[in-house]
Amino acid sequence: MIFKKYKYITLLFLCLVTRAITSIYYIEDIDSLRFALSAMDYSVVEARPHFPGYPLYCFLLKIVYFFTGSVGLSFSLIGGFSTFIILYFMDRIWSLFTSINSNILLVIGFLCPLLWLMGNRYMPDIMGLALVMSAFYYFLKILAQYELKSILLLFLLLGALLGVRLSYAPFFIPVVFLLFRYPKKIPIMVITFLLSVLVWFVPWVFDSGWNSLLDVAHNNTAGHFTDWGGGIMSEEATYWHRFVKMIESIWADGLGAWWYKRHWITMVVGLIYSVLIFLGLRYIYLRRLKLSLEEKIVIPICILFYLFWVYFFQNIVYKPRHIMPFLPFIIFLCAFGIHELRKYSSDLFSKLLIGIFILALTIVSGVINWQHQTPTAIAQVENYVQHKKDSNTIFYSIPLINYYMSRHVGLKDMIYCTSQDQVDAVIKDSLIKYTVITTFVPSNHKRENQHVFFHNPYVNRLWYQIPIYLLKE
Image (cartoon, rainbow, N blue to C red; front, side, top):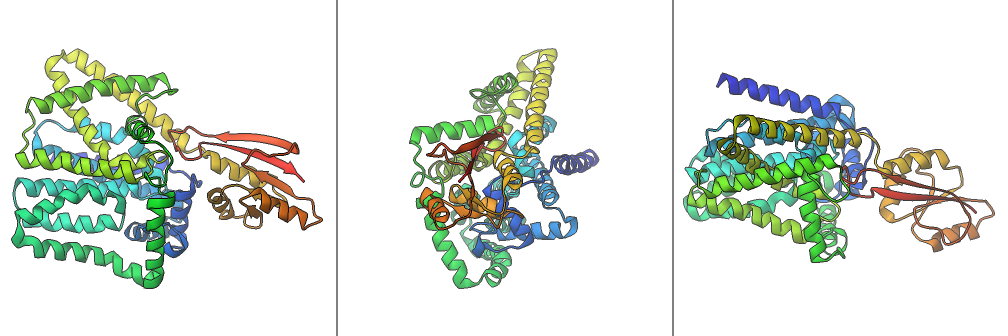
């Protein structure tokens, strides 16, 4: 018990320090911009951040920001603590099913590239995953044996989850099973859940205004599913392309394994992952993991519900962060696989393979998070425009990029256009010579300068390559 206490203290320290060291101090994409703005001036009505507003997360963010005075460090401290909570409850879940040492589980989870990356990104996903894993632990405990404390904690955490990362909620649809299993406890479940929601929902309504909140909710919900949310109704990608991107998100972005055009070290990671996942599945297939019938049904159903949701209704083509809830379960498989490996291979071979795996994973995760500290392509564009703009500059791009640029100090006074007709109208009605900076290939030959800014797409898949053309009219 004393050892576990110090193990968790050490783990918390490492999570906080490493994430603080790898903090980022620039705005890497449009969603990050909205969350950064929310730390200083929260308003879901004005998309700071976008709906559903993540009110509980942003409230905690503002508290941390008040003490640190740094947006980047605030997100990293919350990210580091959330990473610790994820690993802590993965350890607790592990202990429900086995007495095997869990250190390797914690090491793999700690080094997981996407979990580390999201621990620094200006977004609530990592805290949402912390709530998913903690709530899932208490869900499993209730399945094993009824306990009032676990029921209260489960429904408190589910209420909190809605205020941090609403899109993770489908993972817990199978919780309705508890309503049938314990019908006499339905009132306490519902009351606990509602109280947890009301804690953040009531202040949110007072802050945003009920009518304004309803308008934003209606417009953004309809927009998410039909216009710009990246689901099957708003994204032109084929079903096959969505499936491939989902696999890439899990395998390459999430776990740091090999994909086309990636470094050969990621192939080492991928090969060993493949062996360990196979052995982990074998471990479960041979029934060495003691699962009750209910657990055998509920665990895969939770995963399948979320799989259905994320495949059809989330932007998995450009935003790998939506697959994060799958990662802990793959890491569980790998840890069981390592135990199986030790059973059927020599001690020297298993130690060598595990050592190579951890070293390769450390390199991949380290490089990705080191590259994350270098500005993304859109942040490089912002820096370029800051140096190139003059008092008569037109910036011509898509609405989201225009929004990103216009929210930066020093760029608010530019003229922003979203079509060539708008650009022509501005120039035609004025005798002033304008400088036009555009991300679109110009239709004329007045091109004076061209630059292409890029970053590693496995750091951030959104806008990883942006061309800029500087024109003199």
